Length: 248
View 1: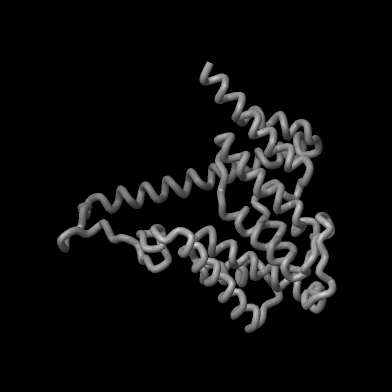
View 2: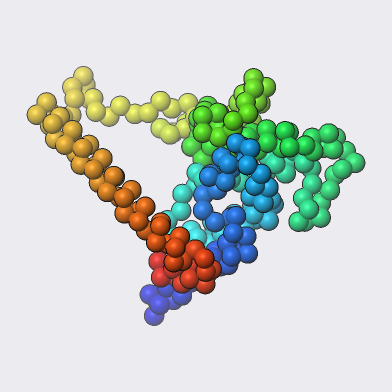
């Protein structure tokens, strides 16, 4: 009885998450490819709407409750980008909120919106990885094609404030081995001696080679599966829901 009850709730939460993605398809997936395309000049305004943010946040909650594997990095970047775009415009057509009478009116242009989405993406990386500088590097190297010194400075300030806010909300984690001021733990050495032998180094190298080969094999099968899903499943939403329930 307990197992079937657990299975029922998992399916229910998974269907709720799938229903949100059915309603807002832009909320599905990590959101990083869409944000990268937007920052590189592709007009995908539908991916930075507030209903997408609501659907993504609730969908993440339902997915975690269903026991599905869920990465936090992509959704955090997507959510930060949506919030940045909303702040720059000062309005949301979907929810009927408009501040055209105040200072936000001067920011309502594509250039400013793109910059603010860049700030939000950097803040998302900082929140997910506790790495403010990493957020700037990601948006600089992988995201935005339009960059300037002012964007660098503002992205840095936004990412640092994000990290500071997280440390204030979770003070115990800020001084741990993975906190903001941590440089990692060197547990391979104890009292000046290493905890491994020289003859083990070839074994470590073999493990690394095996990991690379298995990774390449995984990518190959993932490509085949993606092509199959694109051809037979993606065109029908009900098939996607059946797939979701089957995986759950």
